[in-house]
Amino acid sequence: MNKAIINYITDELLNETLEDNLEVDDDLLGGGILDSMGMMKLILFIEKEFGVKVPPEDMIIENFMTVSHITTYLEKKIKLD
Image (cartoon, rainbow, N blue to C red; front, side):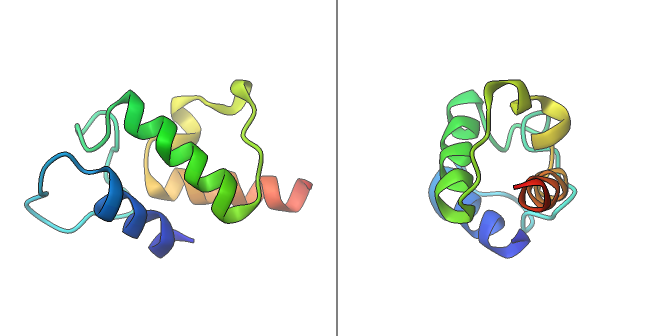
């Protein structure tokens, strides 16, 4: 999961090149890696790629701050569905 998400972000969403490789604990919004439009595109990718519906109430910073947070969120969603 982590690799697919990192690859999508680095290949499709980055506006500029990062100094270092994107890590699972990098702050996506606070670190300026993604803007709000990029985050929405990422959520659409996650829904399509992993077959998970992300309801509006789940679109909070705690679930999408880092790739690690996203993976934890997805693992919980997949177990619940």
